[in-house]
Image 1 (spheres, rainbow, N blue to C red):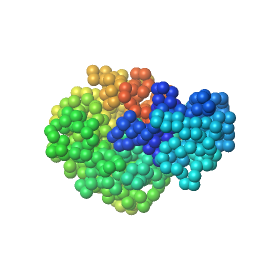
Image 2: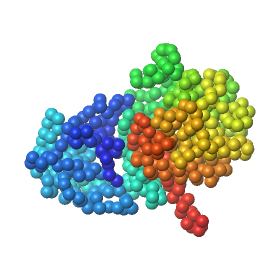
Image 3: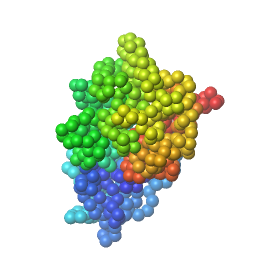
Image 4: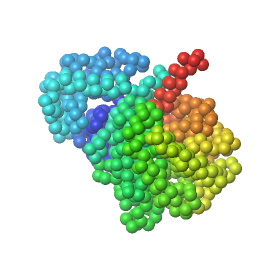
Length: 553
């Protein structure tokens, strides 16, 4: 795959450094930091490579290197079905005839490899004669250009060789997704964590990590389990799992929020943030993710390790996040829902959309699965799952929809969260059928479903984050809910429409405009859970196709 050095910068697994194209044709390097814009983390600007008086343009940028020089290379001849372009030119050829390559020699070290050339940048210049350490400490042993290029090429070939199998028509986007997951792996507090994006999300976010683990389980289940462990190792004594684990600590309540969030805090929660601490977490999907990993790579020891922390987390929601004591949990802060700017929050600081208790019912069933795998009786968990679903139906089902409560009043905004009780797999058939009919109605169904606010709701905005764009996690959870509720054909159709949107949409974005199928509004690029869930759905499509081929279906 090729990098455009804008949406897809040159970076590496474990590195915080990003090499990007500047508007004037030069290259700039910045460092990814928690809650810090890249414009404030500049490492180097104005980088150009010269041979005599002639500037060597960027010939191509690949996962393992950037090449400067004119003329094609063997790597550029690869076709769409040939896999990612890695190490197209031999390491020995790099630097010949004025050719220069830029390569990572380690997470913190970027090296220029070549001969008879010169690098210039704002405030400096140096000759390139073999290798030139441009950023970071010199590698040990000293940099040998061909060896560095060979090592980088081997490193990336190994990673791509582990990519889950996908249908041929999805392979190009899948390679981009698999690359995205690799480069979003960095060290957080000494541990390997997969962050949502090096563009603005440099931390281990709670539910993001569960979605990341779903893709990692296919190639590196140990790394998938590590994402869960990091969060549970920072669980509070009362059972809350923090929203974010970052370089400087955790975000577990509103007093931990960065300054950039204080205005939104005042809007949605009110009061002085340092005086009114509100817990901040993310939707309860931990046991669900643990079981997803276990299904692919069974590990009873891991289940035993996490079982009690998962129980404490489940209990926290009913003990600490059910302020009216009616047995149905609420989100105490918009951030805990994950849907930061949804119009649900326009009516108040606390809300109870139907997704939350659907997740909790699913968690009860997953705790039952884990208990059974550990030789314990799952009956208690099953009973609690059934009782919670019954309570949701009794108190929140109107006969046509599940309602969202905000401050004790019914919100009139329509979101797909009211369809997520399908995820429980426990709804009466008539209710499940009614929800599926609603999903397939013009309110939510189109060429590119599912909008995060209904198409026919007056608050629908196709570019505003959670106010209309398509998010892959919502679609993924609906696909699973449809399957669990016996609507497999609709699940398959939603999967195919979702995959087609991402395949044709230009990149792995945070969210998509459902009217155009392109990047929406201010959505960031290189987004982890979009990459992870696209890969998992694409792998699912591949397995389904293989099964049909074997049976002649």
